[in-house]
Amino acid sequence: MAQGIFLGIISQFLFGLLYLFSLWLQPLNGTDVFAWRMVMMVFGLFLIIFPTVGCRSLSKLVNETLGKDKKRWMLFLLGTLNAGSQFWLFMWAPVNGEGVNIAMGYFLFPLVMALLGRIWLKETLSTIQVIALCIAACGVAHELWRNQTFSWSSLWVCLVYPYYYLSRKAMKIPALQGITLDVCFIAVPCLIYLIIQEQQFSFVISESRYWYLLPALGLVSAIGLSANLKSNQQIPVSVFAVLSYLEPTLLFLIAIFWLNTQVSLSDYFTYVPIWTSLILLGINGLRIKHH
Image 1 (cartoon, rainbow, N blue to C red):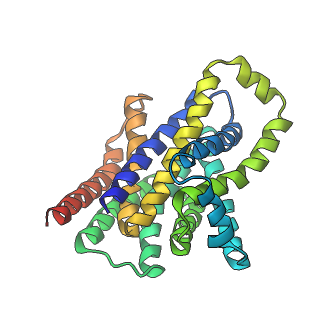
Image 2: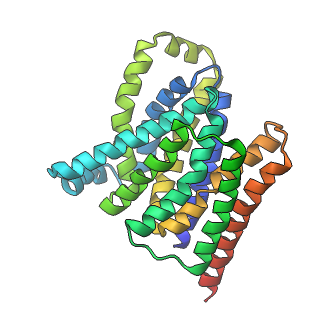
């Protein structure tokens, strides 16, 4: 449980860092950054796999866990498509005027996760977990009322992405091996896209900052996603859901301190309930550990 919470926190910090990569990698557009991220992530994931679980574990996933079961393969590949669309949207949205809508999707994502965990996986919630989720829901409700936007991108994140996490948890797919197989599949069309865009390679080679930024993007993505999926497997969905609020909180802090964004009083009506729910969950975790 403690390891799962630690991995969840680490992954949320790395996801916050990923947001900055789309700014650092300009003038590459969202789809370009997504394609480079997937290709670089393959190398990042194999760098983690070799010294930890070894490449045999990947063939074990393909030959034994999934094997010749067509239904399991179909569910796995549907999850791959789901994840691929979310990775693309995360990089495409901020530079295409959908940043606010994507943020709204990620605000609603934990609540949908907690609800589905309760219904689908029959997970029970402690009183403090219920209170923490209700307080967070108040902040989300305020954000929804304030922006009054509910676009396709918000819905795609909050209604579609939870199924990726929950199906992988239900299928007991190992986190690191599962995301590696996903990314290997997603990287193929991405590599084709980059090859078709011939000027991409010459542009990236001519700019020395891309020589370290692109490998860093792959490594940060690989560590963040594998830690996030491992955390999802080790802790109850309700706890994972509340931890997922760390990412939008970090994005909020990055916007204030890094991008010098002006913050209105209304912003605090969104974030203070979310911070309160995270603190409540932290106190609850320490109380359980103490007992």
